[in-house]
Image (cartoon, rainbow, N blue to C red; front, side, top):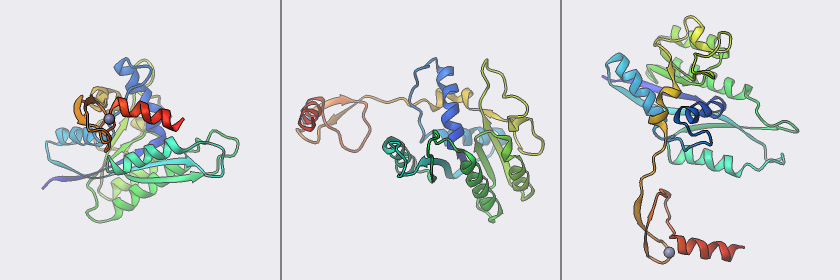
Length: 235
Ligand SMILES: [Zn+2]
């Protein structure tokens, strides 16, 4: 029988630490991350470590979005969350926050939502055997200890600090006792694995039927010619 794993992603942490993936790849201006693959990469690590089959039952993602009342444009953020849910199969828990004059990075909600969700599933018989936590914050320590008391195994995923050294004592879970069952994994070590590589394919334009080479993987494809005409019409 395979081991059931659930992945819990602290979206605020992942957003901040995606820069260590870029740095590792020498892509300081950023690159695309393969979010559909990301949870599976760490499941494979757990499987290799235990020499057991691991079944990824769910990926839970937690983040915030500025409320509609604020002046922030959230369409890009909403589209990203939508993509994670519909194209990557993530279970999304997004909280609308009243940001007022701040930049909207209130992470308290993310921590509390992730913690309660992990504990909830940990207390449910046979929901998961192992939780993979992508997000490193000492605030999670008490919750992880209790999940482990319920017999669940915990895999921590963190990121190296600047200079490629492990994260500092006092900020990282990796130095805490009784919070995990495996050596920590570093997201930077998997930079190559989680980088999105778009394959060039020939696709048929939805409008004119012409074939063109593209890396666009979305549902509807329009050739460059039709796209340029369309933008002229819009403006
Ligand atoms: Zn066309």
